[in-house]
Structures are given as C-alpha cells and as structure tokens.
Image 1: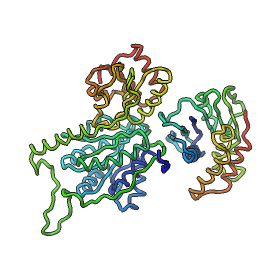
Image 2: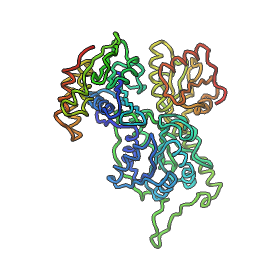
Image 3: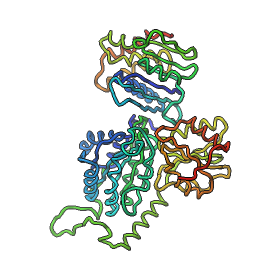
Image 4: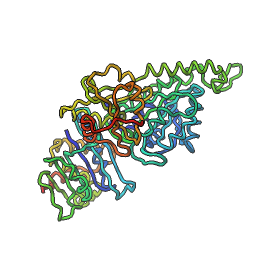
Length: 179
Length: 360
C-alpha cells in the first residue's frame, strides 16, 4: 500500500513519528514493518526509518522506490528524493530548507514550516507531528481526523500527552502548501 | 495474523517469548545488535520471579547458565559476533553434560570487531561451532518478528526434549525491526520435574552429580547415545518454507533477512514472467535436506543469497541437492541484498553469464 521513509537528524523525533504511523496503521488492520538506521552520533547525526504498510505479507523491509518521503531537513531531502516514485509524495520541513532548492516536477512536494510552527506553540519537540499532519493532508494515506484521534490516543497511552501535540498535528494539515 | 497482536522489535519478541516459555534465568553481556534482549530481561525477569544477571563477561555468564541449567531451570543467554565466540567453550561443556540451554546469536557483519550492522557470516560458527568435541546444536533462523517469538518458544521445548543446546540465529535486521507479533501463552516450568538435576544435599537422599557423562556412563554408551541423538534431531527437526518451487527455473536459497528480500524478488520476477522459487531454511541445523527432494525437472540451478564473503551455506545446499544442479552465489557481504539485484543476478545466470561456484 505504501513504501515510506522518514528522515532527518537525531533528536527531531523521526523514529517516533514512524512508530506513531505504524501504531495507527496496525490498528486499522494493516501489516506493517519498521526499520531504522542512525549514525554513530545520535543527537545531530542522521536518522531515518523505513516503513512499509501493506495488506499483503511484507517481503523486503527495505523499500527500493518510495511512495512517500518525509524529510525534516535539507540533507535528508537530497539523500532520498531520487528514490521517490513518479507521482509520489515528498513532505519537507520548510523551516530547514534553503530557498534555492529546485523540486522535481514528477513528485508532489508539500512544504510546511514544521520547526517554526512547533516552536511557536512552545512544543518544539513536536515538529514531527506537524510533519505528520502535512503528510496526511498531502497523501490522503489515512483520514486526517481518524489519524489525529489515534495520534492523540498514542500519547495518552504513554501518559505524557499535551494538548499542543494535537494542535501541532492540526497546524500541519492547515499550513502545508504544495510547491 | 490474529487481531490480538503487539508491535515489537525482534529482540523484544525473543525475550518476551522466552519468559512466556518459562525461562527464569538469564545471564549475558551487552553487545549490538542484541542488547534489547538483555535490556528487556533486566526490566522483566524479576517481575516473573526469575533471575537476571549481567555477568562480568560472556564466559562467566555462560558458567552461571550452566549452573542454573544443571539445577533444572529454563535458561537463556544472547550475544553477537565476538561475544558469541566467547560462549563456545561452555557450549561444549553443556553438551558433555547433556544440559539444555537456549542461546541467541544476532549476527552482526564482519570479522574481528566487524560492524554493528546486520550480517549473515556467523552461519559457520552457528552450524559447525559449539566449541571442541562432537556436538550438534539445533539452530533456528527466524525471518520475522512473529517467528522470533514462535521459534524462541519452541526452542525451550526442543532444548528440553533433546537435553541439548538450541540456538536462535537471527541478524541485526530481524532483531531490530518492528512488526506485528502474536505472543504465545505464558506457562510455568517446574524446575523439579527432572530426575537428573542437582537438588542440594538433604541427608539420606541420593544425589545427582554433574560431570562429563563419559566419566559416568563410559565412552561406548556416551558415543552411542550422542550419535542417536544427532540422528534423531537430524531426521525429526528439519523445518523450512518453500515458495513457488513447483515450476521454478531457478531456486533461491536464503534464510533470515535475505529470505525476506528474496520473497520480494520472487514476486517481482514472477510478475515479469521469470520463474524463480525460494527455499527458506527455518532450521539451518538440521539443514532442511528434505526440501530439496523431488524438485521438478524445470530447476536449472540454485542461487544462494547470503550476506557474507564466502558462501557459508553453499556446502549445505550442495549436499542437500546431492550436487545435482549448479550453485550460484549472490553474496552481498556487508550490504543487505536488494530485490532488483537478485532478479538481475538470476537473469544473468539464466543467460549463461555467471559461472557456478567452484570454491565454497
């Protein structure tokens, strides 16, 4: 159904964003597989996770062509954009993208100022949730409201929720713009 | 997959399944990529009334394991790469005393320190290793998180049934991925149910001793008993999965993470009209020779797909196939294979552009 990579630098909540997505997808009856890779230096190093969501048995856990790339910084965008399928989606963090990046014509690129939005709500660690909001809006992978409810439940279950989490997600839906 | 699932890493599924199988003693030492097993045990073992020990090193941990096994407990340890090497001596001692234990080897790639990334080049140390002397370990190779749980649960029963060391051979990829997993039911193990265990020294009670069995029953009886055990394990415990082998022109052979990629390769090749099949050993010892019996005439050869420099599994495939068809090696060493690479390799084989392996 979807081959996905989330990428950014360590500390941006890349792996967590991926875990939220698989948690919700699994609840909706999908098969999922999540794998991560990260550099030796955690905070500030590169971090990425690959996610496969499928109705079928999942073979290789490593997607070779992507339906969706979620890039939380510019190096991650450049690293993976070439792997996105024609007609696929790239969601970029506008706060950390240079102005001179030329986006490919055959990929649907959506940008959202995730870091700025999260900081403005005093919830700087939730830039990943802004990105998830933008991604749901752009791709229609799941119903935006259903995903929002499940995302909120995810943090409730962990016992460390704040209303700003869902706010960040909703602003991601609202503020994402197609490039 | 049942609706009653959890999302877990392979390592966590191994640890939880062990606890549910009644494992109440774990000793080990951290090393990537299996440290989550140790972490999980450190948090959860005491809650189940068991003992968790982070030993001062691998050798000490294995000696502790020996003691707990001799007392009748279900025991486990886990490691990777150089850490697993250090367990070899004690595997031999466990064997000499006919003691059950479950060990996990989560392969990282390389020789010496190697890498912390996934690999499949500890096949030999797992299927041929186990220290000095004659011994055979049952070696189970999961290819999914669900299978990590299922095979670990089974491993404790097999270890007890044969009074033998059973190994879970996984790799950094299977160990660290998260998937849906259905956990087996929790059961308790009765430490006093055997007649061979050490039970302390109450007066007037006949006490068992732990010693090299050769010292107790003599060499001829020991040799006969062990050989019979090896033969029984070999004939009874072969496990595998065959995928689309009925009309295949080339059969891929792979286990663990490579077998996952091979499944995608088979699917993609079939969509393009190329008849690939797959034999996935679930036990790598005993190697599933039965899977290679009665294969169709259409099969032109076998392609082993492994993350190693040498084909470590190649000899087993040649023996299983009785050298009847050529064997080709798609060996990706430090890299995880890609489905397209495998399909392209097979196209080259079918076009006669690849030499069969000579030295394996």
